[in-house]
Image 1 (cartoon, rainbow, N blue to C red):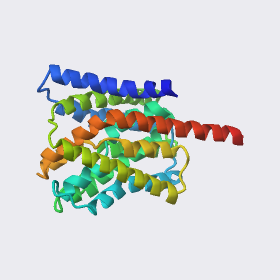
Image 2: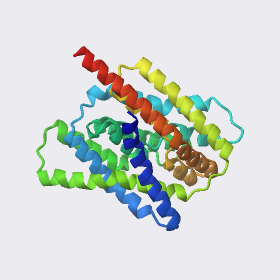
Image 3: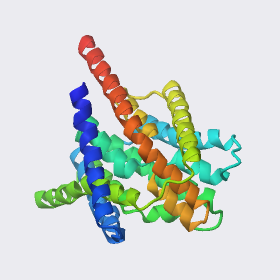
Length: 304
C-alpha cells in the first residue's frame, strides 16, 4: 500500500516541483500560449480519446453527477453562512467550491485508479468547469460571462466522445491514435505549468489562507458524507469524490477574482496556501482512497 502511495504521489509532485524549479530559474515565462494549447487541444484530445476507448453510460452515472454537484456547491453554501471580517463572501466561497480538478485532480486520479476510470474522472472535471463558468461567474458578476462555459473545448470534446462511443460511430485507427498521442501531452504539461504558476505568486495573508483551507476541507468532508448518505453511489466512485474534496483550490479562482477585482491578493494567498497544504493533505487522501479501494476489492472477492 505504501509503495502504491509513493508511485502515485511522487510523480505528481516531482513534475510540479520541476515546473516550480524551472519557473524559479527562468522567471517571467509567458505561459499563456502553452496553457491555451493545453486547454484547447491537448486536454480535449485526452478526454475524447478516453471516452472513445472507455465508453461511458451517462444514465448510469447520474448519481455520480448529482454527488459531484453536491460536493462542489454545498461547501460554498455552508461557508456562505459564516461571516469572516477579513474577507468578502464571494472571495471566501469561490475557492471552497472549485478545486484543482484539472492540473492536479486528473493526473492524480488517473495514476491512483487507472485510465479505465477516466470516464468518471472526466464527468467530475467537466461538471466542475460547467459550474465554475456558470455559478462561479454568477457569484462574481451578475451581468456578464454567464454562458462562457459553452465555449469550453473540453465540454465539446466530451460531447463528441460520448456521441462516437454511444452511437458506435466507426473511426479510423490513425485518428484515434493521433488523439491519444495529443492527449498524452496534457497531464504532464498540466503539472509542469502548475509548478511554474505557483512560483509567480506571493504568499501573504498566511493566517487567513490556513484558516480558509482548513474550513474548505471540513466543508468538503461534510458534503462528501452527505452525498454518500443520500445517493446510491457505486463503490468505485467514492474514492474519486474523496480525492475531489481534498484537492487544493484551483488557480483559476485567482484569475477570475483578478478579472472581477474581488480581493485577488487574498484569493491568491488562499490558492497558494492550499497548494502548499496539499503536500500533507494529498498523500493522506490518496492513502485513504487506496485503502477504501482495497477494502472494496476484498469485499467483491469474498462475495464472488
